[in-house]
Length: 68
Image (tube, rainbow, N blue to C red):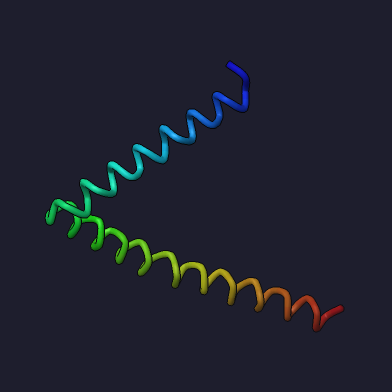
């Protein structure tokens, strides 16, 4: 088996597993609620953290630009 064939087979296996997992999650209400709540928590934590990092970086860059 060549490297490209092995990569293609692995990609198909991962896609199939992902689709199967998504189907189970969508069709099972408790898992669907868990997935939606987890997504909300992740989104609620990651976006403010990203924005804080961007503001901090802009603050540092503005101070170094002013002194240069």
